Image (cartoon, rainbow, N blue to C red; front, side):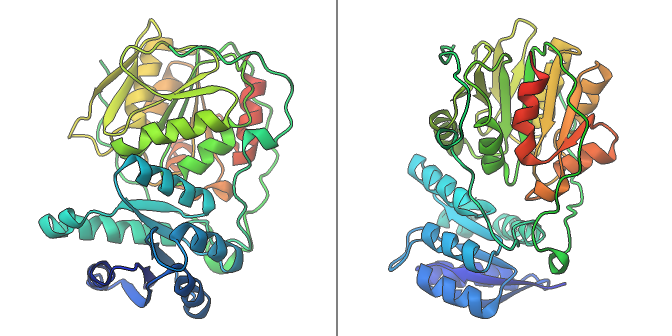
Length: 381
């Protein structure tokens, strides 16, 4: 099946280059281009593409505003192009909140220096998000914690040798677009197993920034367990993402640093480009990214170290994402007696990582995204 793409960018060079790269793939067809956000909306309505690639900074209407209008009028998977800067990270996170599915660095040097790698990455992203669950009858952005009524919480606390094999890619399976009018309701699931967990570990990839926001904003400031987060994300983005979560959540969130100590009510986000492990004393170790591994940070690495350090006292959650990262780490957690949850297919942007957990019979529970936060509160005591 050919994936139809609309390319949106005010740079004539970048429009042509992206169109050439995509058109070289016989399974991708560029059906139109646009030079600003207003044109993008008109073209999306007229051409009904399967995927839209979107720049942010454009005349007349910027990319984020265009994404919001497109998600309201003709929901379509959007791939944003972003600069690898702190401001670029902030803008990209805003675009993901607005409804974009994923992003790629907008790097002209890479295009000229390593065109084959850029081509492979761009085409893979387009194919993966074309199968995402973003074609819904409507899209609703996540609600910040401040807008959700909550019981009074305690003040926020102060901040303070496993090698996984390279993860094998998993097939991405989603509901066929033609049969979807929105996500199916999540079937009733059993109540979570209550336990004095020493750690909650959450791993995610594509769709993860919004998913993590939805989960973490449901937690009270006095949440009793430490939390570690692994989100596939470039090095330039994780600090801005942690800062964003910290502002939205009642718990504290920060980008993890070597030597940080796990504490209740504190979530530590693995820094992009590196690996995060936990030792038996509850200290975080940040290690250089291993080139043998596909992901930096890698969920398998963090889950595996948690299994070694805390035995049966870990509650792991695998959220939306492409591939199978987290499966082997979850296997080690299960062998030690810990619990593993997976996000359900209906609420995933990409049902890859959670599907790998479910297919391997590693999931103790499968929950819809909007139920995971409240179940974490129920499970941890």
